Length: 129
Image (cartoon, rainbow, N blue to C red):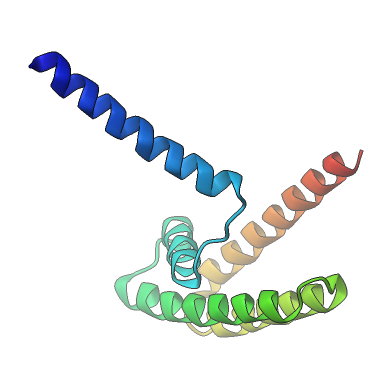
């Protein structure tokens, strides 16, 4: 009986793990809600947001994640238009974050953003070589 229970648990874990890997392997994007939540959690950890800030940042992130999703659908295959749209959304993010964050938090946010940009460029350069 114990063996059957252990085998059942292992089977369930394997199926769960395989389903998660399959989703990642297919390159499926997160929903705007998932994306906004993940970004808000990252910001909360990085910037030590208070409850009010977290609520406001989450609303901003959700709005912008929905805009990004729309732009991805509207600009499929048009890399230039997609890049321009994403840059515009990122500018909006900065404009909306500034009044919500303290000066120190905003500075730290911009530094982190710049660092992530450099890392992304390095990954792109590595892929192209």
